[in-house]
Image 1 (tube, rainbow, N blue to C red):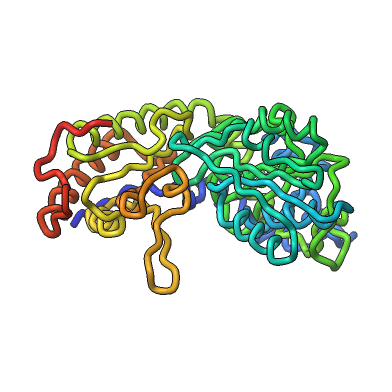
Image 2 (cartoon, rainbow, N blue to C red):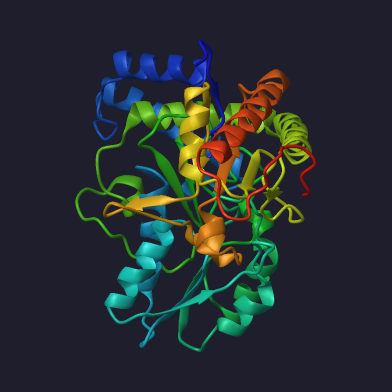
Amino acid sequence: MTSTRAYFDHNATTPLRAEVLEGLQAALAETYGNASSIHRDGQQARQLVEEARRKVALFLGADPREIVFTSGGTESDNTAIFGVVSASGREPKHVVTTAIEHPAVLNACERLEQSGVAVSYVPVGASGVVNPEDIEAALRPRTVLVSVMHANNEIGTVQPVTEIAEICHRAGVPLHVDAVQSCGKLSVDCGVLGVNLLSMSAHKLYGPKGVGVLWIRKGTPFTKLLYGGHHERDRRPGTENVPGIHALGIAASLSRQERETEARRQLELRDHLEALLVQRIDGVSINAAGSTRLPNTSNVRVEGVDGEPLVIALDLRGFAVSSGAACSSGSVEPSHVLTAIGLSREDARSCIRISLGASNTREQVEALAGAMEEAVHHLRRLAPAKGAPISSGGGAR
């Protein structure tokens, strides 16, 4: 319905920055050597890899020798979880995580359970933030790992990682943090956080898909999952994705320079958007509104409107957002994160996620609010839900 489009789904993935694309293309065309080869072409590739390692280490406040390049966030999460659990000599083994983790963590924990490892899933309340005391209460003498995300990908809530790290340190239990969503949006310093392992992914901070990082603090018990060559200090075998790693280094360096300024800008836009939606559309509420959230993330519930049709309606109007529902085996299931914070299955299906990025402007935010007001009115008129507001305007947050 519109000739221009605006992208508001940056938590799913981000577009390549021009500088990153330029570096990626140059590496693909010019640096084709195997980084393990000793000839000049191989050593040129090795230089790109090690330069990127230093940039990522600086981005994370880490030692470059502790950086392991992977294929992305899912591999990093799986490698951290299975690598630490496998390295532990304790039997029986126990792992602690939360109910709102990414599927890359939750499904890995489910696999652990199938192999006989006990897993505790610590709940969260309506705030969407786990209580560190609940993590502490879940620990057992046989606990070998705690895995807690830094920021939630759906509702944006920031978890008290530093406090949890202190608890884990006292108990002598390694802490893994999935920082895929927070990297590039918050300051992520491994030393300040006090964690043992941390996952990140390039495509969440304007880098390419297919490359990520697992940071492993020196001395953390760890067993590699793959077997082959001795790449990445014998922690992750396989010929390095030199162009992708080089591009990740560029993206991390640029993000480090700009993230504070950009975070403030996106926070202002997000708050402006939420105020417009609440003011213009009856029955709108912001999930976890009172909690500390990622500056770019807004999870919006619209009473009486299913999220999937609203996403489609906004897409037709030129706006890319996402819903919290997941399609599996032909049925749409509500988000596990939204039900974990206390929403009913019906209410969870009435939510959409809006995640801003570097390309979004105030004009786009205001246009999205207008398009959403129009789309909600249209959908309510087509299929009025029981108890749904009839008129628009004057919603309450």
